[in-house]
Structures are given as structure tokens and as C-alpha cells.
Image (cartoon, rainbow, N blue to C red; front, side, top):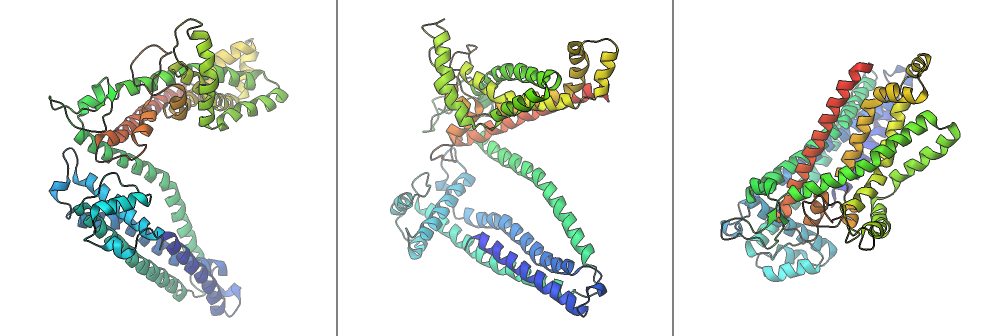
Length: 495
């Protein structure tokens, strides 16, 4: 049965424990709640917490540890002959997991009988075809050792899940019994519940940190696996992006796939710079006007209209780039105009549309920062005889500079991570050129293309997506560190 049923059952036990704990507390006090140390609800909550928290902690630890144990048991079943050149045992194990998941899904959907899924003498070619017919993801033909390992993997996983159900339910019942046994008039239930809530809040605050750590670790491990299969030097310094999903090496021992990041990195930076060149001046000037010059009625209409741009899906911006901005640029810079542009998909197309999308990121945040500048600073400037424009230029903007830098950083990070506008507006050509009217692509667009379809994670052509993602993460981290340095440097003058 799915894990969510176990969660529902444990929560049901906790609800029952709450009712029983509350009743037991009142009964122990002879029905007079004034004789209790805490309110009756705290006694019920104490029982519910002791039923839920240990059970859920055990379930989480079990779900984290069980795959490691199963992997360790199954990886010994994979013969060395199954590890192809350029692959590894870990990548073959990933194929085993996909096959085991396919067998389980096929049985659950009725496309395959349980006895057929367990049959160790089944024909592996027929099994591969049946899994594909059932809609399961199988990246290659399953060999006999892979099939046996997948069957063992499924058997161990299902067995572990069965024992997890028993253990979790036993812990939940024991925890509820523990809470009920300690329900006496003198028990400080309120203190126990408040400590538990405080720990819950600490755990909630830690989720973001743990999630970030998990993302980084997943990127690091897969990036290291990619660099084990593909030379680091070629990835960072090869000026060509030309994946060959057939794999192989040339006569010099170099891989046939050319997976250099330089053209993708150049396209990312080039398009982002054009987008920022559009968004920063327009957004900043709009923020200055709305905060310093516009009246209440104009501001009440203009600011929401600007912020509407932030809610438009990026696919709509992509269609706008493809159907409107691209043809418009061809009319001006194409063969009938200046003759610089050959097609509607170009760096300029994506940059302009992305810049429009980023305007509210710059304007809205900059407007809030400018409004946060103390009015006393403006009044002091006016008292010294400065005009409104001089006050804005020499007092307000310098005081708001750290916040404005943060807004520009947010816009830059958003531009670097954009995908759909690039795919539809800039094309898919990986090249290094200074011509903004040529088609180019970005790191994010190629991450999508490398992982689209039946990606074989035993090949560097698929694992390169993680190396690209890691590079993008380091790039945005560097931007954040630089922005933090700028903010701290200039904030000291206005504290």
C-alpha cells in the first residue's frame, strides 16, 4: 500500500489519542478541570504528539536508510560484464531501479501478473517489450542479470515497506500508550506541548537549509559522476557544443560528443545583459516616478499594472517573442530593412522580451526601497535649497542604493534561470558570437533538452545536465556574494 495510507492511519491514531487523553485527564481530576495543572486540551495534545512524532521520525529514517541497504544488497548481483565502457555500477543500478519500478507499476496497473513479475526465468527481451507497452520508462533492453537484480530490488523494497508499516504502527500505538499512562493531574502537559511546538518551529525553519543542502549534494554527486566520464578540461574550455548520443571515442581517444560549456555560458550572459539593459533603466525610472513624482491616483493605477507583468506565465512571453517581437525585428533589421537579421529567433528577440518580463522585478522592489528612505533626509535636502531632481539624484538614490542593487540582482538571477523565452525567442544554436541578431541558446535551455525524452543516465550526454546546473548555481552564488559586498560597502555611509 502507498505510504500516504500509513500517514493517514498514524494521524487517525493521534486524533484518537487526543480524545482519549483529554477524557483521561478529566476523569483523573474527577471531572473538575481546575484540579489539573494544564487545560484538558494540552493533555490530549500531549498524547497525540507522542503518537505522531516518534512514528513519523521512524518512518522518515526508514525511508532514507532502506534504499541504501537495498542498493548495497543488489549492487553485488550486477556482474562486471553489465558495466559498459564509460559507465559505472552506480549508473547500472539506476537502470535496475527503473526496471524494478516498471515491474511494480505494471503489476499495480494490471498489465502484468505478480507471478510473472517474480519469474526469474522470464525472457528478458519479452519483459522489456511488455514494460514498454505498459508505458514504463526503460532506457535500454533489459538483460537477464538486470532483470534478476530488478526482481530482487523489488522484493527487498516491498519487504522493507511491509516491516516499516508494522514498526511505525507499533511505535505510534506505544507512543499513545505512553502519553495516556502519564496523564495525571500533576503532569505538566502544557510545558511538554510547548516544547514540542518549539521544536516543530525549529524543524520548519531548518527545512529550507536542508533542502538547499540536498540540492547541492545531488548536483555535486552527479557532476562528479559526469566528470568521471568526460574530461573536465574539455567541458570548461571546449568551444563547441555538439552532443552525440551514440557515445564513443575518436582515433585520438577523445569522446565524440563535444560538450563544451563556453557557447552556452556566453549565450546565457549575452541574453541576460540585453535583458538587464532593458529592464534596469525602465524599471528604475518607473520606480523613481511612482515614488517621487506620481500622485496617489496615478500610483494606485500604474503600480498594479506594472506588477501584472510579473504574473504573466513565461510561456506567454515566449509566444509574444515568437509571434510579435521576432517578426517586428525582422521588419526593421531583416532583409527588407538593414539586412542584419535573418530569422525572428535571435539574442535580441529573447533579450528584449526577457527585459520586459523583468521590469516589475526591478520597479516594484526599487519603489519599496525608495519609499523606505526617511522623509527627514528629503526635508533636509529641500531645506538646503536643493531641487526635487537634485534630492532624488544626490540623496534618495544613494541612500536606497543597497536595496536597488538587491533588486537588480534578483532580476539578473531571474534572467539567468529563464528557459521558455530563450527556447522560443533565441533558438537552439550553441555558438559564440557578438552579433545580437543571431540565434543562440543558454545553459538552462540545454539542461532541458539533455533531459528530455528517454535520457540514459549511464551516458555523459545526460549527466552533463547536472554539470551545467552546478555551473549555473555557482554563477548565481557568485552574483549573490558580489551583491552582498556592494550592499555592505555602501550601507555603512547611511546607517
